[in-house]
Amino acid sequence: MSDLALKALPAGACDSHMHFYHHSYPTAPTALLRPPDATVDYYRNFQHTLTLERVVVVQPTTYGLDNACQLDAVAELGRQARAVVVVDATLTTTELVELTDAGARGARFHMLPGGTVDWDLLEPVAGFVAEAGWHIQLQLNGRELPERFRLLSQLPVDLVIDHVGRFMPPVEIDDEPFGILCRLLDRGHTWVKLSAPYESSDTGSATGGPPDYLDVTNLADELVMRYPERLVWGSNWPHPGQDRPPTAQAVRRLLERWVPPVFQQQILVDNPARLYGFDR
Image 1 (cartoon, rainbow, N blue to C red):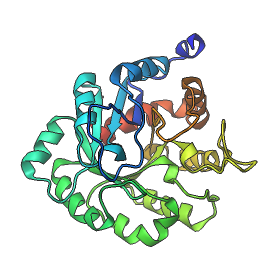
Image 2: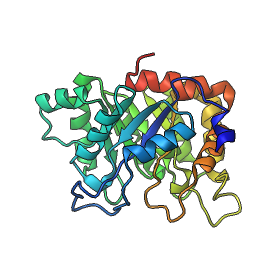
Image 3: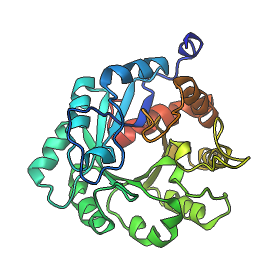
Image 4: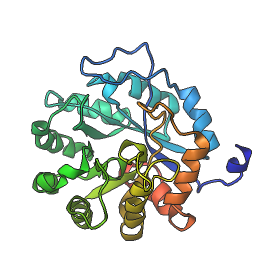
């Protein structure tokens, strides 16, 4: 990997989507994924290889509403780390302050099997966390965006949509669901994570699958061309649920394919600094 290490990314480059796992933390009853341990030490090796400096640790579905595994890791990583947690309507003002002090900057809603919070909690949670300046991070099948547009466009906080929209199966640029994603971006309060193409790519198609995931890359290219100021990038390390997770080399190659040098300062540094409150 020395050849990659020599090609350093801009100072302050941020991995805006990854997870930690450890067997010592209890899994949620709703959990469908129970990945092997993925610790801070393992991640630091990956982070060093890709020349990343900042990280956003995202609560996985494995732990439900118990954010301890991720927050303990954030505390170990220090001031260059932030968190996106899972909360519900029982969240108190005191807990909101404590979570913010611990590095949390967003509330995650995973609207796919294994998720803990439902659509009916989206508005009340968004309204409550708005006072702390948090955003809502949403993972869904992007093909649902047309029916969810009104709800999402009226949220009182910024909205961050995972995994290039996670359209399952993949869509074309001219399809309505991708058009709705662009309408949300046009409103100026939505962000998209360039991450985890394997979650939606049609691996059985000549136009999809690794290493280039062309059916998702086409969407990423369009977003980078039109909305570079509304994008962040994430590795999705350690790639939970993948029988053959990509190597660090493959992650770096796809990062450079999706985010060419002319956009790296904005997408890897400036945008996450603004969204997650890193020191500029």
